[in-house]
Length: 169
Ligand code: NI
Image (cartoon, rainbow, N blue to C red; front, side):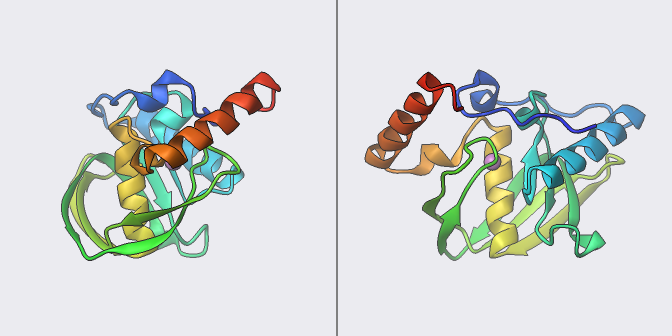
């Protein structure tokens, strides 16, 4: 099932999500639906709050279907370490048609549970490191817009408010 993506302005996106506690068939179906919804929206990462489900659960595929091993399920993820810095453009499916330059850590190690509830650790660099930080932010109710300067953030908010008024958001 393909879920519609919740857009910026919906409070679910700025609410810390609840931990995943049940690893069963229902979660497997949800993860399947999240991958499907993410691919449909042309994304490389999707967090459950973005489909209106306030759970600490994200999916990532920085290869966009090219490499089955790049498909990652992050349940209850935490960042263990961040090394170095990278600068680059970042967008979010919940803030469509916007993209901003945002510094992030270059090499990030996380700890998370997989689809079966088993804990694993994984280190990602560059795009994967950025995806780890972006997705884990989502689960804490943080959007990339929150990391921008207040000047840039206000500019984006004004543009989005105008789109909302015009019925285009
Ligand atoms: Ni996002």
